[in-house]
Image (tube, rainbow, N blue to C red; front, top):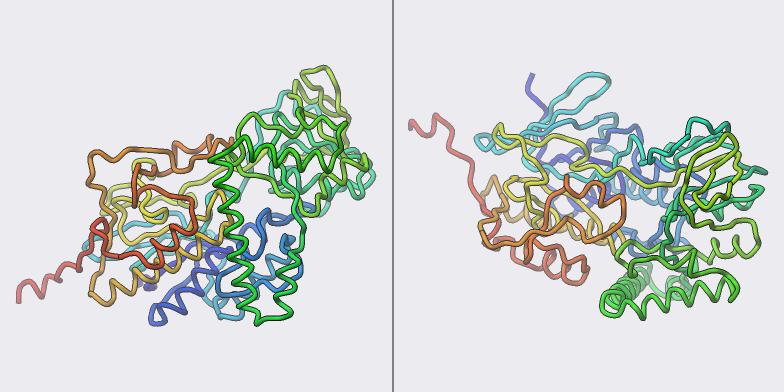
Length: 492
């Protein structure tokens, strides 16, 4: 049986994959495509995570798509609202009819002779194969099957329940109970104030602090503009306001980290008062934006701390006990429920194997071209968001670029495009410049970035906008070729 063929195969039906489908339909209307989704529902992160209070740590005016305005009052939206936004987008544009659910992509192999990919996916216990001319990976960078949990001493002794947020189920009860949340990142600062509403008490146990910034859940200017202006115009103004503020603050953190640190900690002290030990519990050892900042809407975490419904303990775990956790300081935390908000396991290329002309590709030996393609790998793009801004800002630009590239190839009759790194003096750097543990644990598996463009990722929306939306496609680094002539044509 001949494998089903598409011009483009998209892997992943989350925020990025649905956006990719809409961009393809708008900008490359003659191209056929399908979306392969390993799970049984669209939405990715926003369908997978079900823990209490699940929300974005980015505002929806930049996390939302460039083509679909966010029209809800809250700028910092909860998970169900974001999932509905993704579902509505897919349905409005007919992208939902292009999704093949339950297709877990295992491997993809490129043939230069045929100028196409053969993609193998597991479906209903069997392997199915499809072919495509271009492969667009939109599966994010973390493993959906399991989160990261360290090897805690004595964890088997605890008589209560232990839960990881990535595996949250509806039967996990915490009302009226003593809860310990291990972690200090975005998930922990989301869980603590939400669970504190009904729990007897919630303790956030952290090994080291994270920078936490409070922002209003609603953007008053955005809500006013939406009443006065057409939806897309109001959305565009608010989006650019947010982008510029993000860029300004990130650059401040890099240029003058002492000043940025003073501003952040000053905000924490204003909420918690002069007697709170901000130095111990909210002052990290690193500078702002060396790791991602944690956003708390309407200062909900600080409100829970002020009301004594929650507390923060900064210490190291000596061992789990039957009734809780004993710390290295000798203190003990009693718990009925322990939540291990200890991070993610990162995954390269969605966990799939890639080969080119029979030779398996080791992603760690490739370089990232413009933050979306890989050296020596033809006709493949990967949609990644920013680490210092909203995910979708970069994904939208990546989709635009992929469509420009496909249209350029179609216009000139090219079947193959491959980023070629021919500069022997090119320096090497990690994929991202972040000190967060979940990045550091896996960076050796990811592609590298170079010391200069187009192999260096600027993590800057304005620069990427100029490069990906307006820059030359044929830049001397992308190598283009036509398919080889078939044997019959050669004989003729």
